[in-house]
Amino acid sequence: MAAKHSYKFCFGPWNLSEGQDPYGPPTRPAQTFEWKLAQLKKLGFDAMMFHDDDAVPDVDNKSPAEIRKATRELKKKLADAGVAAEMVAPRLWFDPRTVDGAFTSNDPACRRYAIERSLRCIDIAKELGTDLIVLWLAREGSYLRESKNARRCVDYLVEALDKMLAYDKKVRIAIEPKPNEPMDQAYIPTIGHALALAQLTRDPARVGCLIETAHAILAGLDPADEIDFACAFGKLWSLHLNDQNGLKFDQDKPFGSANLRMAFNQVRALERNGYGKRGEYVCFDVHPFRPTKVEHWLAHLDNSRRTFLRLVEKARTFPEKEAQKLIADRNYAALDQLVLEHLMGR
Ligand code: XLS
Ligand code: MG
Image 1 (tube, rainbow, N blue to C red):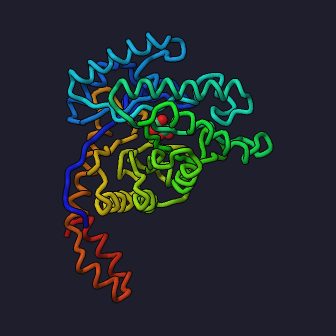
Image 2 (image 1 turned 120 degrees about the vertical axis):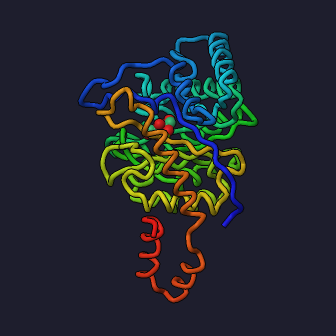
Image 3 (image 1 turned 30 degrees about the horizontal axis):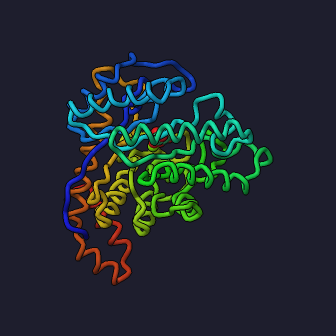
């Protein structure tokens, strides 16, 4: 086990969501950014993560000077609150120009838009004092196989990454894979794909990844193994912990809510890799359950962090020697029970 260290925590403004889903309207009133920042402070979190338009609303219709001004105003609010900006992610899935993909759209004008928007996102990140850009490649994929040339799309993705890397010599890009939703099939569904893509770029050392628990589960993978794999390459630069009950829509449940043992194993993987020691944050990409009342609006975030910290304790007090003996004896039934009893508390 790596030496013990403490963790820093983060969430995004979208994690205090209002409850709308494809079948119904919001169930809680919209709140201001100031309110969200105040809640983050109240919960004692350390940083906030942003989409480019969370940081600068209506970013597409603003001039570079207006973007700079809005970003500076935000920077001041964050500095006054003592909250860091963890990353900025271009929202490449909302605009009509991203309807058939952003970097991989069949329309060259739309691809140009996506790249331009990503460069503006880098400007915002720099101004906010973070070198980390997250790319959730939401619409890079297809609804039907014949509609796009998947081979060419790999080139488009590399071209976009290269433009971003060339634009700013310090920026680091963390790719956040997800196998489906909104697309039927995404081009970068797993960490293996993300890290392989990094190797094709002009500066592989500046392209890493972000693991989201629910996304790994949707790909049929164990998020703990994804964490170990990414860390073996020194490439896990951010993390979205949450939970997911099987293969259905992206649920973004509180961390540990669906599968506590899987959550425990993610924490064990983070501990053994010393995640956080190089300044990485533990972010919770979680949402309140739709029926949540206004007065319980923060619980999913607070609970996720509580569960995380309890599991850190569980990882640090795991009876390692006993486990090693059982492993040496190939007594996996006893090992299984040892884990369960450790989690339940004897
Ligand atoms: C959605 C994604 C999104 C990213 C940031 O599923 O998780 O929230 O984390 O663009
Ligand atoms: Mg996420």
